[in-house]
Length: 108
Image (cartoon, rainbow, N blue to C red):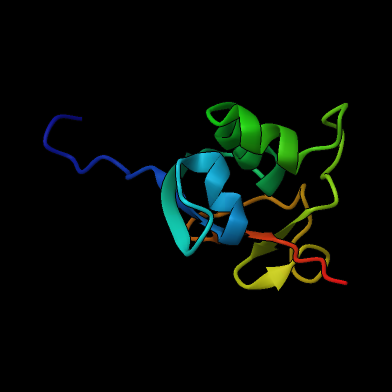
């Protein structure tokens, strides 16, 4: 009805860190933050698929070649916990979550 407060869209915060920032317009250091709308039924998978469509290089780096699963070089955390602890790719989001994309480091 007119004059009633409209519900605010739920949001998730995506933090892209370390060398992964190169794929979203950064310089490969620090972090870049993004605010993403989430809807009913959205999961880390659906939010990240939607997000990475805007960044083709990140899309290639984050997902397996057939896009069925995550690739092996970027770690995904939800609220500071790696996937498989409190969330997995298909856990429904409620809003306010922070999804972090953290580049893995390999050394020798």
